[in-house]
Length: 556
Image (cartoon, rainbow, N blue to C red; front, side, top):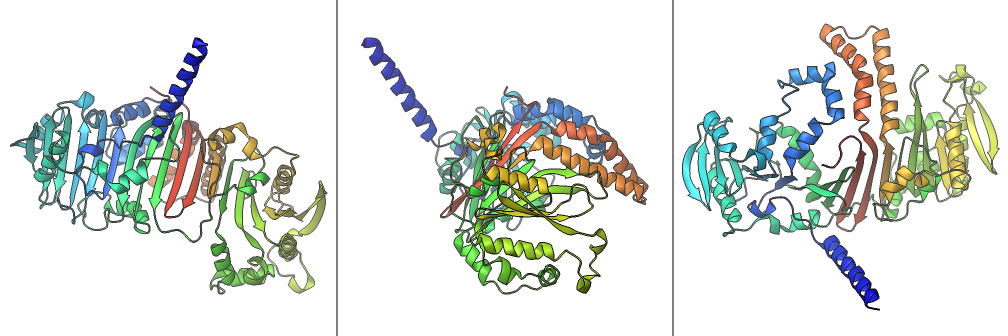
């Protein structure tokens, strides 16, 4: 009896510990020593270790050994074997970068914080020798220094070092004040830190998928890089990246290491009219196993109704409607439902052009009307005396109808290997594909006669990490996708060479080098095994999760 009670107590304690760990909010790296008011923030744990791990991986070594990588590094003015060793030493155990806009107490500023680790004590001699840093007193148990930054006039720079931490500030006049504020927070003094920021806590604190070891967090608000910072290299790219937040207010997230990378992104935004509520994605039941890539998404009833109410749009749609003999407005939108999917089974590169074997699955509120519309589209490709001048008439296309497990597949028969456009109606779904076998495999999956992608062990292992109800989902077998991409690239390079290639000798040399290195590049990139991405729309937030499984880079 005593042993039974003891066992029950141990189990209860384990459950309590597991629940408390699972429910505890994530602590963003060094957010507690970053002064509040930042419009952008990135924090990384063991950045130096991660950099060493990547630089020491077989994949990196294989890429670095190619002539293409050597050329890129030389053009960038970097040595491939250096791999940023001094910078990695300074990154240390934890590092963070915070951006402040002109409206903040510090004005237009950037703060870099780190716990130096292996690089302890390396910051001061580096800045003193390279930029003439001079003492500026002490504050919060840290020594302060000022120096002239190697950037346009009007900027000031300062750094603080001591107590196992280092701060470097770059500002339009308040660098020393920013360094002092960070030193105060490190010493436990006055001031409010970014760790108490409502956006940071809401967008990064409780991620959708929390597995493995935390490696970093980030936050960007709508005003990040919106103006100013013209002196910062690559500012246009940073503005474009931060621009995603402007439509919604703010976005943030976290990253974990577990056999690869798990990235969580949460956006605070007004509800997006086009996104459907999270639910079970039924179109995935029609996706067969063994695909290279797949995707499925739900759209709100409001979005579907808006499509049906839309006015005819100018551009290529009317011309396409005339060729196909159907009206998008009258013949397609009335029956289209709120969920759609696609899957790719491969790419045929042995012919004149690369031909992807892809299929689309559309939910149909009126399956009979969906089938009749597809029939009219396919019949429009059959030559008639009244349309003898169609550009595809010389191929002699014809319609072929076959039954598969009680479902009719209609195929446009063409003398093109690997290209047999087909469609079928399976229950409440219209399946349209470039390959008859792919449409047939979809019917088998729908009827339970063939394996589904959802039953594939590789897919299921990642799918289990996500919530059961989703707004969208995408998946890729990276090895198969890289083989397909490599085949298409090789075809493009061969075609370019056969048709004369570039006139510029340097450009021709680059193309030849890429072609020679292509097998090695594909082998190296196969460090990526599988990728899954999902989104969940809930009221005023959109959660997005990316799971990337990798080989070669293990847990150290």
